[in-house]
Image 1 (tube, protein in one colour):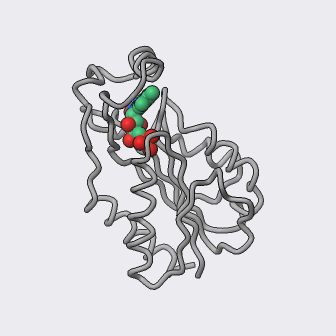
Image 2 (tube, helix red, strand yellow; image 1 turned 60 degrees about the vertical axis):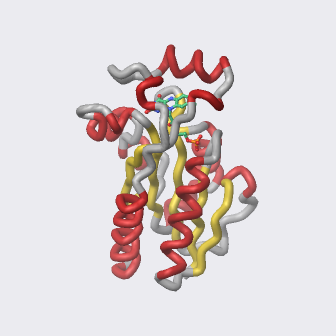
Length: 175
Ligand SMILES: Cc1cc2nc3c(=O)[nH]c(=O)nc-3n(C[C@H](O)[C@H](O)[C@H](O)COP(=O)(O)O)c2cc1C
């Protein structure tokens, strides 16, 4: 089975998660390609998709929306596992907030994507490495209670991500 672990990313941390997911799937003997979705020119060869984007300004990246729209037919016909990375999930009620506001499953269903499972993962925020425009976006658009500066660190939880990949494996075995 050929799987695309496709990602959108601004600062690279979601790309690292996509590579990790690819590595775990390879341990299970899947044939995996890890790729930035903006570089993907065809998805015809894939039997399943694991797609991830960070949340910036309350929404997944436009690149991901474009990818979902462009390959809508293929993504409707094959299993898709979708995840977002964010910092809001770290706050009290954060998982529910992210589920309702960042990853509303209805949005994915409306665009026809065959989503089998969704993941919400804590990401990585390094305020020192972002420019003033991004700081501005973050301070204006971040919809949590915390000051984003208090959430500046690498929060990626690799065992949690591995567990999610295990769920993907179980779901794919049922396909
Ligand atoms: C400009 C900017 C805006 C962001 N907006 C949000 C947001 O609205 N909600 C949230 O939970 N996280 C937000 N984040 C945190 C990112 O989702 C997190 O840092 C993510 O792991 C970044 O992934 P990347 O390194 O692949 O770009 C924002 C980060 C930046 C830099």
